[in-house]
Image (cartoon, rainbow over all chains, first blue to last red; front, side):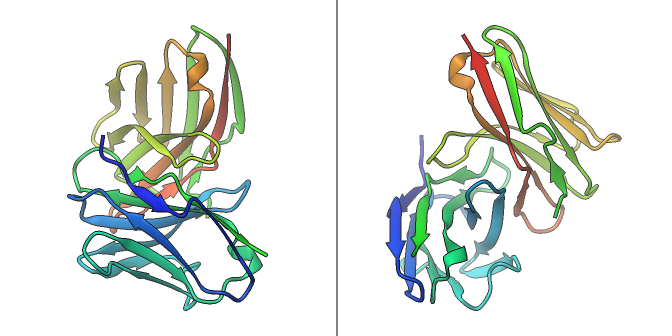
Length: 113
Length: 112
């Protein structure tokens, strides 16, 4: 079964540092997403990406966040200057419209200290 | 944002019996609903979905029922197995855009 792959599985970073979370979506999927889940809270939508541009973003996705699909396979989430409250599980997902569900990766646990 | 609600934080069921997980939503523009299962430190795993034009979808031991007038859906697992113990999330997709809105999740424990 095709998978969405995320690296690293765990990232610890100092407050104020930049982090890049990486994802390899399923190859024939067209829509890509980042979600996050702060410990004990809901899974929250951050951003969706289609046709090489952001199609929708939440209020969480402020100027500190950016996404890229630099080489047609990887899909990255960058946080420019991390804050303590950015500590969460970050999930990448991909989707091919009309077929089944959205496939999620196993997540990156980001810990900001 | 409470558009998707799972009011039961946990459910405990005996092995072999039916598990019924409930979800309510407030946005009548949602057109597609999904159930996900999640283990600790893993990503959500897709289980089953239903379009707003249907009222039932079945896949093996899993059946999802949708009551549009009540804005309510439920996931039935029968028979329940110990391996079904996990957190179950209900999610919904809006008519415009295709982001998912998640409920808070229900912890299911299946006792053997």
